[in-house]
Length: 286
Image 1 (cartoon, rainbow, N blue to C red):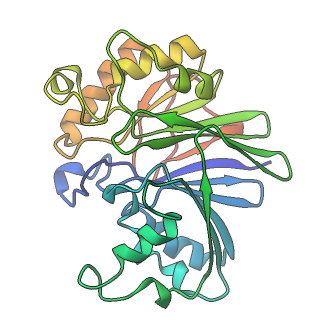
Image 2 (cartoon, one colour):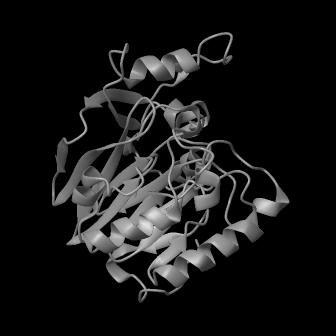
């Protein structure tokens, strides 16, 4: 039973094509999850471009995309998703219900209209289905693949995902902002006992003090949540563009001192959920 997670984009807010960011990666949010014969895509940031090419190379014919929300850094790879232009590919896209829009298809269509983009969404020949979901919904994929959702605290709203397969659980909790002194009960319910929790750790505590209300959190809060929920590993995710490799190494070191199961997401890294290294071990490269 294969259950693997590959990081194609780990950066938040803005892509960073700088030599100083290569060790951790500069593409924005995009994660590939392989569960049995199903391919799931978490968010469509700039990391989606590389994933699309890999799907073409391996002749993958269908996938399910789960969007946390529709802010730019989580959808700006979609027009460059090469697989979407192939007629023998099918893609189901799930996203929360969006105020003023019938479905996520309207958002993606408008992003590819003039004067914003030269090629309209109708040029993409893949078979696409756009699905609304409400935070709290559960999606049951046979055989044995369950996806649970929860509301996140982010401007305009966002959805967190818990993917369960083969007795393991991977959680994707980005973008979200904590409230000082209050553990988010929605998140606790979603991550309870999970094997890996990818959590929005955009800011340090010092940075967060000047950015309250911007919709993001800290590794310190992530540690509190995974401890309370009995989760095994905390994956630092949605790295701030101002955090170069040196800054990220320091953040990862501090987080690991506080919680042995903490590690920072790196572009290209792979997690084998069925064969995870010991807590504190090194995540495999691609």
